[in-house]
Length: 95
Image (tube, rainbow, N blue to C red; front, top):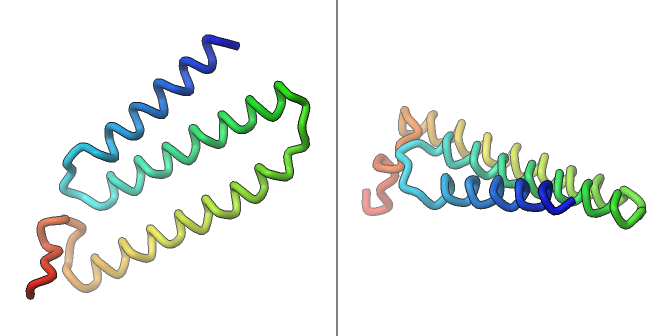
């Protein structure tokens, strides 16, 4: 049990490190967010199975994570249509 908690924590730290580090592409940031959501989902599954609770919370969590992914993809598509790429450098609010 303790080994799996350490693995979940390390995966969460790696996902957060990728998210906070400076990347040029929006797609990498969105993929790191999905990785963090996946780690949190596995953590919820582990904890709820350990305490023998119902899994209804997981369905709500999955619904919100799918909505977050769809919103991120729509932002990515609209950014590529307007700017031609997904670089953060092309996002200038002054122009």
